[in-house]
Image (tube, rainbow, N blue to C red):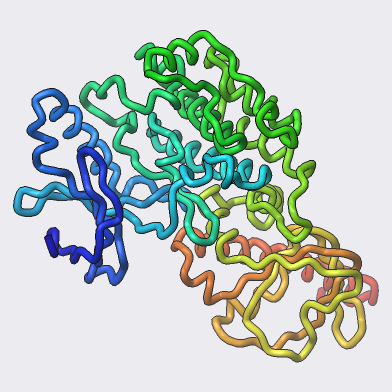
Length: 431
């Protein structure tokens, strides 16, 4: 097979019981894509044909509906010459299965950061009316830069579905108790499954080990797993507590929301022995969420900001922008204070959440800086290149424009107030 529809097949990426995934070329979109092709005989299977078709249709129905940096995008779906297919974002790398073995365990701080990103992505999906129902390492991809994307929404439960969902979906080792018992499901079934994934990434073993599905099901319903630190002593007690709560058999005892789970993960980052130069994306995300400049940005837009921004730490009295130099990048102060001076005279002191250098961006050209900016003490500054921002989504760019306009209005009002006060001080009146 050389082509499916308008997509040219380049090579096979992998195959399962019901489908094969190819690396393909979308000539119209000028991009490489992952092309999932359903085996025709899978639909004709007398026992499971209807189930396979249901799963395929569910995943295909999400084309263009879930747009999040940590969810594999579904671009297209269709049928060509009797072949059913789904076109997805191609993520070069491997699944998290590769890091569930004792000899390839990831650092603890990286596991928690992966879990944090999954929480944010699944929270977004939940707000869009989608419950995944099959969260497991094989369905979480890690690209070559170490970032993750959740895939395979074929088993998803959607709020907009007009027909009864297929029951008995999922991988037994990652199923929640309510999923095994085929009870009504909420987003908390995915919270449980993600808890299993985190446990496995931390320890290299599942919380429950069994030789058959019946034994696995019994343990999920009746046995409490050992703390993850039993298998990896360097795991902090606080992490054990987080994983334990995610794995509670009673959904009422689990995290009630994805945000609760994410915040619990975030709270332990600062106590982990991560390399000094590494700042977890989860920590950066929380910093952005707390800055006034990004107040109107949604979660998806903040993840875009993380992708395009450069974070720089400065010592005291370090120059950032020099008067008279030409540049286009602009900055948002994340921590610390900076001094704005002109010809050596102090004009202003900026606080976290304030920006500078934005006139170069708003002017759409290289701009000669009219003032100097230097740190007043240790500071963290977010640097954004307009060329990188141009590649972001329209929504993200729109949020930046809104933020800049709000700042310019505030500065104009402040300037008018200062001018009025100056005129009063000099007893100048226009009336």
